[in-house]
Length: 334
Image 1: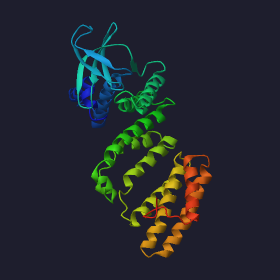
Image 2: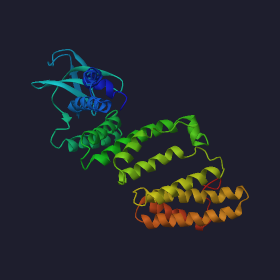
Image 3: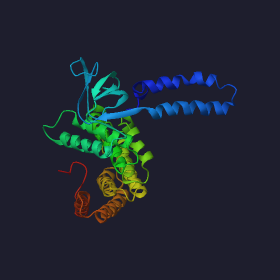
Image 4: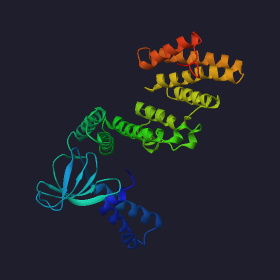
């Protein structure tokens, strides 16, 4: 999403490159003032860029006439830089993909800008609709990608909207799930150590955490990052579940208000319960008993934290299995 910004904002980029010319005229000024002047000139050009995003598939034409050659179609949530307007038409630089930019004309219909009244709700609403399409068996093709872009635009264009944090998280979450499906489909997903496989891109989750610190969206983003630290196949060794349990416990301690707290506690409890059997195979009966106690404590916390949730119910089931001495890991699990 960031890689093609400079190309898309061609006019602003050219303006910024021309700053060198203005700087040469300011040589009599002190160096610090020269730098400040250059930055202000460039920043002004960037701020003046008018951007928008279509909430429907739109056609790009060679000229402001629907009978002229159609150059391409631009998808929902893609970005356009508006160069000029002419009656009901917009002259735009349009990002067809993250690599391909074209210049042409499009109808001024269905394009939301930062100045559009209720624009945040409109773009967010289209994102929700696209996400719903993606969940349907015969939904629109690439609807998940549409939703991912639209949510991001909501946060990007309307950073002070009450919807901004949720929108940025939802965008990052969709991207994460798409990448995770790809990563986990590869043979490297079964490798024992996490570093032996390519992980999901963390940039967008970290952006949520940076821009919306202290919110539940930041807490949820931090929870996602744990995925990249998990082992593939434990190979019946205690090393991986020990490390993973500690990671989930650390998360629970650092994010006590997180919507994912009960899930984190359950994940930690299940790994501790798995260690009961693993330690026995390693002739570490003392550690097996200690792990049993920790598993019970963590599961009880999960039940207390969210008794009516799925994770609370799963934790209650886990407690029952531990008390009944039913293995939760290994060949004895059906």
